Length: 490
Ligand code: SF4
Ligand code: SF4
Image (cartoon, rainbow, N blue to C red; front, side):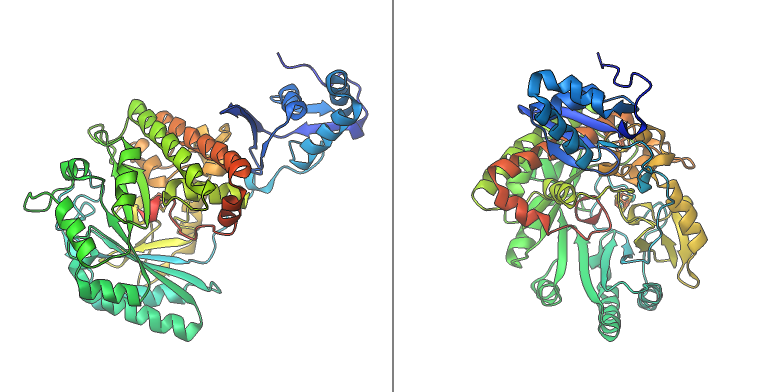
């Protein structure tokens, strides 16, 4: 039962507004998340008692709160506790304006990331492919070199003052259209040099077409290469066959080893592959520099994970978080990108009004000249934001981005994790809303998973603070610049 803490009349100067908070216990730790400003703290006993006195209330009287804490903790400790809660912005003077993130329109900033769909075709036939075997619901097709150059040119024309720029080659399988990769790379590099911009290249591949020459080129040009692979052979080969029906694990790993590729691994989790601790360990041991997992998103019950499957995934993530802490204690950052990026985000401490850069920073370009807010949503008219001939339509982009705000998603408005999560991946939200018009919202079972994941991330952060503070220092300066919050961009 929450005590009534504002017997009226109260001295107006003592009336404090209570911001939304989420106190929770995990692994014996008493933790607190402040919803709007994304502040996070481990609480001592007096603060824990105090937050339970104020949680769920609109306002409190500072004097009454101090009096309520004094018998148990003494007046000085009680006053210090209230001051501490004010520092965290749990309690603020009653006329303090609400935090900006809840009310302002979302900023539509100059673009930073171009995802070039160079090939809408693939030499694999993964049953769960959201892109319809790379075709995005249309005929297979390749981007022509002159169109690729035009896309890059248009993208650079719209960059504004941004100095850090990303160009990612994507498909289908981008290595099926190498002339375009080379042409777009050369043009973008020249343009970035001329304009003094830092340009990072990325390419996402199924790994089956890698050659030593290609890998040498990627290494020289400092590409980040992401290989899609789902774990050990028995897991990977179930859903990732080659076009001719052969198993793909051995083919991929042979190429990776023969070329000495330094790559990231990107795993799609399905209903039949939820043992992520085993999957991640296998891929780390196989030599991948970084491993990220993402539940499959198809909109079909055949593949998409239900609540029970997601609970299994979360249990595996818990095991991996324990391993992350054990490695951190020995001065190493375990290369499991899901946890690392959450820790970096918590360390940065700024509320996240949107989940990713879709539409705000990122644009995906297809082989017909169209521009979309996200690489996964290419081909979907609702997410089209322009054309290479005319560039991004700023009004269309602005309107779409306003639809992306958590405030337009009903479940997010009361969710304690909303400024950690930002409202979830728009592609998943769109699928969960039956691919209809906005507003799009993530389904309850997936939100439970997301909240469980953020809660685990917060707990791991608190553990690192105590058990491996040096690792936390390393993570503090390393915020990911990826415009997509799915591992390695898809
Ligand atoms: S967990 Fe779900 S309800 Fe909460 S912010 Fe994310 S998408 Fe919204
Ligand atoms: S998080 Fe989802 S919507 Fe955002 S860029 Fe990544 S895939 Fe697209």
